[in-house]
Length: 395
Image (tube, rainbow, N blue to C red; front, side, top):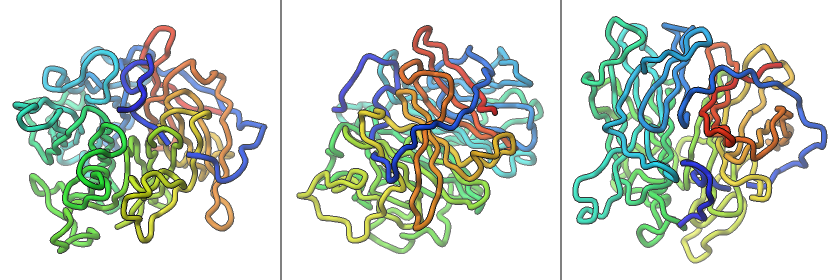
C-alpha cells in the first residue's frame, strides 16, 4: 500500500517527478483572493457559458456547491451524499469530477465521476465501482434533479485508491476521463499490472462520445478495431492521473500524474500514447522485470519527493490579469507548493515556484479551476481548521 500520513482524505492520492530545468531562486509573485472557506474537501471546479456568474465546486462527500457573485449558496446544486462511497479520514473515493456538456445551455446535461458501493465486494474481489453519471437540469439553473440521472460508464475498482476521477470535454466535443491503475502499490493487479493491460480501463485516459446514451466510441480513437484493446482507451501507462486539463489556446491535454514514492510528473497526453507505468516512473526505471514499452512518452517535468508528495495538476494560464503567467502551466502538489512550467526551446520546460504568501504545509492543494476568462482558482483544505477553501489567483 501507499505510505499513509496523518493528513485528511486525499493525502497520498497523488505521488511522482524532478525538474528538467533548474528552479530559479526568485519566485513569481501572485496573490490569493479568498472566495469562500465554507466548503468541505473540494475536488473539482467547473463553469458554464449559460450562467457565467456561477462557480460550481464538487465536495468529495457528494455535493456540488454553487458560488454566485462571491457568495456560497446554502442549497447545493446536487446532493448525492447518500449514494457516494467515502469514509471519514483517509480516503480517495467520493465525488471526484464534474464537467458540463458543451451544449449545456440547450440540453442542461452535466457529468460527474463518483465512487459507489459494490454488491458482495469480497465475493466479487472489488472495493467499489467508479461511475460516470449524466444528470439533467431543468428550468432552475441553481438546482439539478438527482432523479434525472443516467449511468454512462461503470468501472470496477479493486482497491480504494488510485481512482483518477477527472472529467473534461475537449474541443472535439468528446468527454475525456482520467482513471487510475486500480490502487494498492506497484500496480499489483495481473502479471504486469493494469496500466499496460489494454483489456481493461484502469491506468488510462478514456475518450467517449456521450451524445448517445450510454455512449459511443469516437471513430478515430486509437485502438478502434483492435481486438486486444478496449476502444474507449485514448492513452495508457498511467498510475494515477489525478487532474487533467486542456490548454484553451493549443488544446493540448495536460495531466498531473501521481507517482509511487519518489517522483511526481506532468505529462502532455497524446492520442495512443504510452506513458510508461509500471516499467517506468517519471524518467526512471521502476519495474525492470516488466516488458519495456517500445516508445514510452516522457513527462515534460518531474520533481522528487523532498519537494512534494503528491501532484495535483493544474491549468495553462490564458487569462489577462497576470500577463507574466500567459502560456505557463500552473500546478501544485498536495503538500502546498504551487509552480509554473514555462515552455522553451527543444520542448524543454522550466519550473518556477509561485510566491503565494502561504508556506508549504499550511494547506493541502486538492485541485485547480479555470473560469471562462482563463483566470485560475485553487481548491484547498486549510490544515489549522480543516476548512475547504476556494481562492482565486490574482496579480
